[in-house]
Length: 132
Image 1 (tube, rainbow, N blue to C red):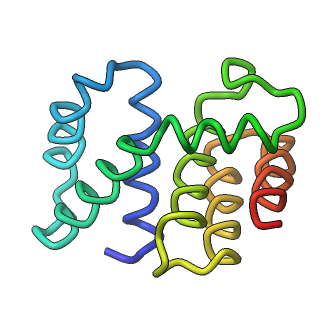
Image 2: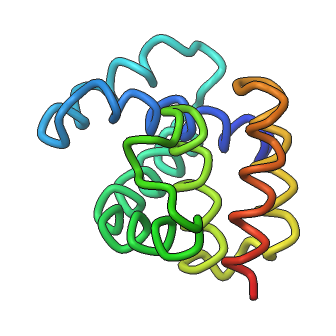
């Protein structure tokens, strides 16, 4: 799988977090990975590792979102947008292998697929503030 495909799979799992408890995430992660015949063992390990790291840092990531999103509370942000922001901020702040510009670009690309047109600008704006 390409990095973009891996990132999209992680986004989908993080999106499920909005509908399931953190305790249910290992099971949801397993379901997500079983349903995709394109995923090999290396991809499973990458997706599982990165998803678990994001979930372990979710409170810190959410604090960053609240601090830079000028008056937006988490419950006002769309679920897809929130999952994209969590993934991108994790990559920007905690994953040295992903350059800032790549994390931002990939987040915007995901938003073009899974969100409305306004979300793209919102996500780009929030991530630009995180970069500062």
